[in-house]
Length: 238
Image (tube, rainbow, N blue to C red; front, side, top):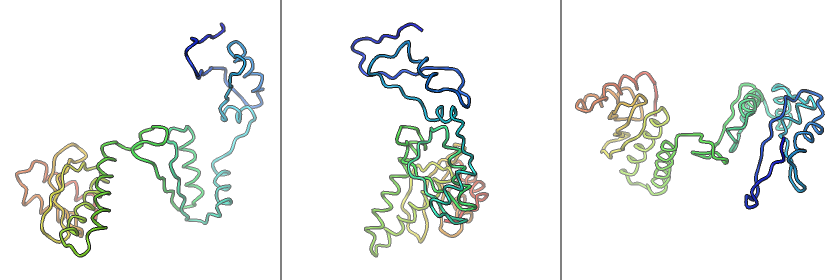
């Protein structure tokens, strides 16, 4: 390999080197030295990913072994709950780590909390428009709950927003929420997961019945009947 030179004004630069396959008991120090010798300068920093070092040392850990260690360190009982805060979704071991944590709970659950819409290094973990709408609805919900007191209309608005959040969870894009008088009723315009537009009137007891009512009063709105058929199969109660 020819000596690598960078422009004088290039500043700090990171360069990746491709080498051969690393197998257990390889001399990683010698391999690294041979790889960087043609290009390294005094003061350069050499980094080796931990996975390569572990492979050369034949240090492997199974998911079951790690799950046992998690149980021991956290005193985790069978059926327990674990929380994972702000993981980096692009890590190549993320899926295996999640599998291990699920095994450690022994029938429990793992709650993963991501910052949205991106994790801390910029990986998109949720649709940006979905996240923006959801955060706006939640902030409005919190404000109304703080301010409602004994105001009936604010209670109606709160029900409407909760309905919007629930519908968003099942894939409906919330286009608008309209105020209507009534107990426990929300009147929403949504775009269904398949792209069709629908008007949905939601109650907090029986969603299918409310969807049928929406068909009856909104026959002129394309997609309302389709919404009823779709919602009736989801069996959702808000």
